[in-house]
Length: 557
Ligand code: NG1
Ligand code: ZN
Image (tube, rainbow, N blue to C red; front, top):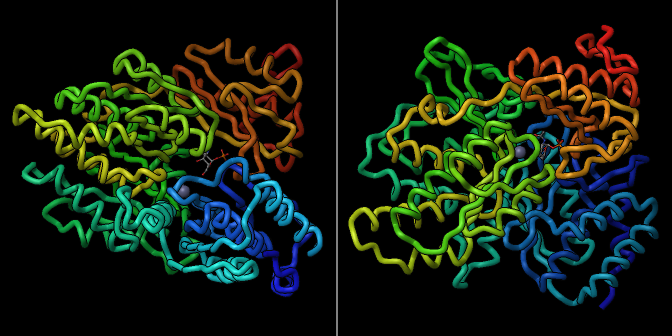
C-alpha cells in the first residue's frame, strides 16, 4: 500500500505553510495560534503514521497552550498508554512542520515510513481534545484534514483537560484487556476519581472548603463536573475564576503559573487566614496550593511540597501494610527548591533523581521505581506505581486492621492518581485525601520544611539556541564563559544557587536564583539577568531592575 499523494496535496493546499520555522519542544509545538494551521494539519499526518506504527492503536492529540496567554495555542501527541510522544519521533514532527513544499512534505512522510518500517495497510485511529482557547475549533478541523489525508479515523472529544485526553487514550487502548484503565469517557474519568477518593476519605472528618482558582480555563467546567460526582459530603469545592466565556481572561492574573512565578494570590480572591486555596493552569495539568498564615502572609505549597507530602504518606502506608520490596523514589528538576531536595534526602531518606526540565524526562525516571513521585516545582507531576507494586498491594493480605486499612488506601491511590501524566484534578484529590487522612491543615503540611527564597526571571535574547544547558539544566556549556561568570556571582551569596537555560515553550532564556533571603535571591537573579542581557545578546527594552556588572564581576549599577 502507498500514500495517496493527490489527496495529501489537495488537503495540504487548504493549510499552506507560512514562512515560520517550528520546533517540537518540551511541550510539543507551541506558538501564536494564527501560525499553527499548517503545523496541526501535519501533526494529523504524523499521528496517523504513529498509530499505524503501533498497529492501529489509538493516538491522542491535545490542542492546548497550557498556561500561555489566550492568543497562543499548541499541540502535543499522546502515545497509546497515555505517555508523551516518544522522543525519537519529535524530530519527525519538526521535519514535517518545516517542509517547505508539498513535495518536501511527501518526502518527509516517506522518510518516516521507511525509517520506521511502517506498514501502511494498518489502520490508524486518532482522538483529539482541546482546551477553551477560541482558536481550538479551527485547529481541530486542520487536524481532521491531516488525519483524513492519510486515511485515518478521528474522533473529536471536544473540550477536555490535557490529562483527560491522556486518560481517554489509555482507556481506549486497554479496554477489555487485563490492563483496562477505565471507562473511556469524560464521565468515566470523574467516576473513577470520585470512587477512589471515597474509598480513602469515607468515615473521616471532612476538611473545610477548598477554593480552586481555575485560571478561567478548561479546569473550571471539569472541576464543576467532578464536584457534582463527588457530592458535597466528601469534599467541599468552590471554583473561582471560572469565566471561560471571556477568552482574554484565560490565565490572566490567575492560574498556577501566575501564582508560582509571582508568589502572590490570583485575582478573584479575598484571602483570609485559614482559607484553603489552590490554582490550576489553563489545561489543568498543574496545581499549586496556597493560603495565608496567621499574619496574613501569602504562603505557597508548590510541586515540591506536593511530591514530599505524597512520598512520605505512601512510604508510611507501605511500611504499615508490610508490603515487601517496594522502593520509593522522587524525581526533581533544577527548579526544585534546595530545601525540598535536602528534606527528601536528609529527613525522608528517599533517593532523589534529577532530570532536565520537561515532564517527559521526569516521567521516565520515575518509572524506574516501584513508587516514583515526580513533580516539577511549578506543580506538574504525579506518582507512578510499577506493575509489580500494584500486584503486591493486591496480593498482600493484611494481618491486622491497621495493615488492611493501609492496603486499601494504597490500592485506592493507584486508582486515584493519574498514571499517564500530571493531572491537576487527580492531584487535587490526592492531596485532599492525604490531608483528610491525616486531619491536617495546609499550614501544618507547609511546616515540614521552609523553602529557600527564590526568584524566576526571563530574558529576551537574540537567539536562545545559543544557550546550551547541560547536567540536568544546572549548568551552561554555551555560550562560552557565561557559566564561570554565574559561578563567580553565586559564590558571593549564602545558600546561593543560580542557573540559566533556554525555555522550550517561550522565546526567552529563564534565569533561576535562590539565596538566604528574598532580597538576595532577587539580587542574584537580577545580576545574572543583567549578565545575560548585557553580554550575551539581550533584545527589547532592558528591564531597569537588571544589574550591570563590569568585567571583574563587580556590580556597577
Ligand atoms: P520551559 O518554557 O521550557 O521552561 C515550562 C516549564 C517546564 C514545563 C514546560 C511544559 C518552568 C520553569 N518551566 O517549560 O517545567 O512544565 O513549561 O509546560 O516551570
Ligand atoms: Zn499545563
